[in-house]
Image (cartoon, rainbow, N blue to C red):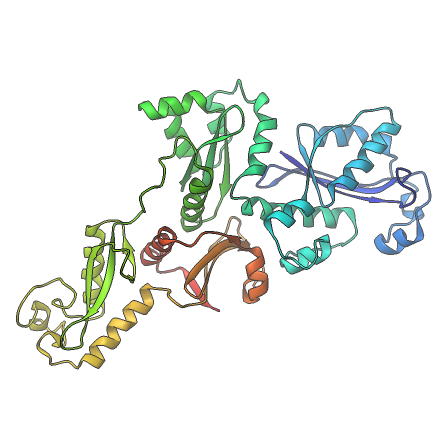
Length: 453
C-alpha cells in the first residue's frame, strides 16, 4: 500500500517551514482507496514568492485546522504504507519536522518519483513534476496546489509501476506487507483478488516472486493454483504468502508482459523459457515460372518468415483459410500436390495460376497483399486496444518492424505525438517470441485497431 502525497509550505529557513496544504492519496497499486486533503494553518508567515507560486495566502488559512488537529488522520492514512512523493526527501522531512514539534516520532519508508523516473523513464529533458508530466502527456490541474500535484504524482506513479518490469517496487512493498499476511489462509488471499485480465505474481515470505502467470480472470486462476493437487502446485502452496497483480485490460498486453517478466525475474516455479512459443512458420519462395509460393514448415533460423504458428496444425489451418480468402492456388500453397490444375480451379475458386492461365503479376499481387496484412516488417505502427479503465487505451509501439514496447494512454495526442508515445511506453525486448505473440493475436482478433505512424 502506498500513501502518495504532496505538501505546500510557507517557505523560509530550513526546518522552520510550516505546512499550508497537504493532500494524501492512499493507493493500492491499482486505485485510490482513501484520501485526505486539507489546508493547514501554519501559525507563521508565508513567504511572498510562495504566495505568488501557490495562490495560498494567510487570509485563506485563518480558519484552517492547525497541524496538531489533523496529525491523527495523517498517521492513520499513512500507517503500513510506503510514502510516495515527487522529491520525497523534502515532503518526508517537512512531515517529520511537524510531528517532532508535537513530540511524536513519525517514521515511514519512502519512494521518490523523481529518482524512480530517472531510472525507468530516462532521457527526459527535465524531471520537475510539471515538465515531466507534460512530456508524458499526463494531464495536470491545479499545478502548485497539493491536491493537483498529488493527483499528478498518482498518475505518474501508476506509469512507473507498469514500467518496473523487474518488479523491485512491488517486491519491496510486499516485504513490508507480508508480516500482516503470514496468518492469511489461501481463501483470504483469493477473496481479495479481482476477476480481471492481467498478470499476477505469487510471492514467498520474503516478498520474492516465485511464480508469474497471466489470466483473463486472475481470481479464478489463483483459485486453481491453490486447489490443484499436483506435486508442483502443492510445493507452490507451501511457499505462497501473498499475491499481487497488474491489470492489463486485454490479453495481448498480458501475454507480452508475462513473456518479458518471466525472462527477467526467472521465478523458481516458472519453467525456464528455453524454448520459443512457436514451432512452425510461413515462408515464401518463387517457383520456376516466377509465381510466389507459400509453405508452412518448421522454424529455420537461417530463413526469414512471414508469420509464426504454435504448431503445424495451426499453420495448416491458416494456409487453408487464406487460400480460400485470397483465391490462391492450392498447389502453390501446398494444400494440393496435383501435377495439373488444382481442385479449386475446377470449382472456379482458383484463377488458373497452376496451369499458367492467370498472370504471375496479378497472382503475386494477391500474395503480397496477404503478406503485408500478416507481417509488420518495416512498418511504423501503433496497435491500440482497450485499457485498464473505461477511459484508457493500451498501445503497442512498433518502429521499422521492431517491437519497441507497450503502454497506456487516455489522451489521443499521447500516441499521435511520436516523442510522447516513446516516453509513455515501457521498453521491451524484441524477439521472435514477441513477434509470434503479436501476430497470432492479431490473426485471431480482427477488431484490433492499428494506426500507421
